Length: 348
Picture (cartoon, one colour):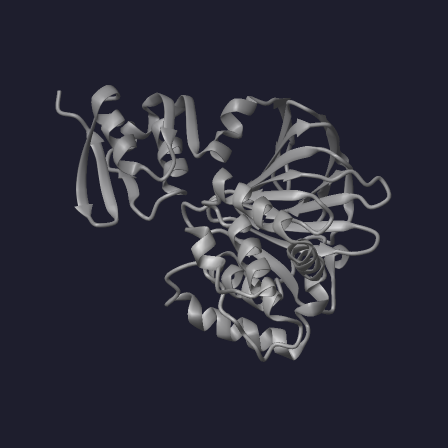
């Protein structure tokens, strides 16, 4: 099927197609193998793909040109009517059809250019040009290859903006949750800003999550430094901490910071499309499941919210979760609309 899609494309269009396909949440092992086969079939293919990656790595500067801003408007207008991931030729864009095709697809799915509003530590992130923002929709997860070789994996309904400079690889987690696999570079630290916190790494892997004004950091490999920022963006020395692999930190703008051993299998189960609940109150479990679906669960009886549940559930599959609640946890479900299911105590 893939061969048929790219058969009539020129080499730059095909490079754009492959970039978009590899960034798609449903990209499969077969897709990656087909991409390698295409790239190895002709040196011109590899050169076109590498050239595209270099251009994408320079997106902050490219985004400032009027042609790119025009492309953004056109791509957003097309996003609602797009029915497949085949990139379309945009011949008028002087920077090349490959990047135009690739970004047209990404714009329609997860990538937007905009100026974020002020946030703690904004001075450290300030820039005079628009910056790339990557975002996922409800139920979507995606891997974002970054220009330095690092990879950001975004959970459902999450958003990051990337502000790389010569001295710092800065990312702001605007909302949601993201896991970062950081390419080693001790001379150019990798810094994630989330709420009133900054997480500093060199070469490691860690997860950052925002829940309201609460920030959670979990280290899966290596170590990171976590610092709380005051309202003016300065670092609060009292709240500085170093986390090692398997450790977790949680904190809010004020108050104590909690640090403990992390349950990595549970905390990172979302990367495999699962939610793991271990003696969790139903109210919290419902909140977590609702993050992944447009069909929302609501609890009718406040006492039901304290029911403790256990199990591993597929995110985005509210029907399967509800069936388990009815079968094992004394819950009766009632569909009240196309987008809402009411949970009540089962009749005794």
